[in-house]
Length: 123
Image (cartoon, rainbow, N blue to C red; front, side, top):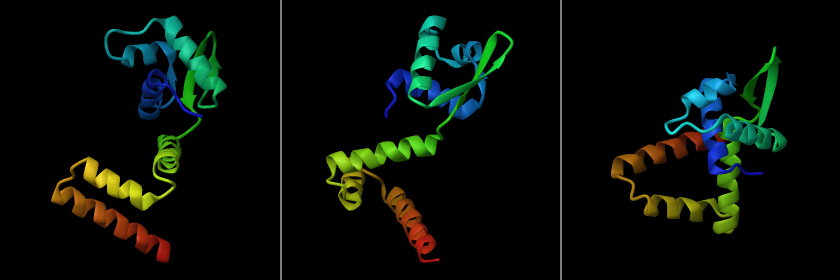
């Protein structure tokens, strides 16, 4: 399941700040601040999707992410590779490195990351 752009913005705050009360989520949001009812609706939808949980403290709820950023975006990228690149990671890598116009330094950095992953797989 996927999050809307507005839900992803709230999740970014949850991932960055950890458990947080709704008033603090609103405060962390850039101007113009969303209405409390809007944030409450988004949080409810995110709960229903299984992305957000909460603990109750008196009359307040402290919200927390149930899914890590890495897991969420990992599944998102896998879905993109499957849907648009015929489940071929090499076709995706070719597209990514060409479309983003990476510098030589960035390509070397990417090569190092891949080589490290290969070493990790061999161990």
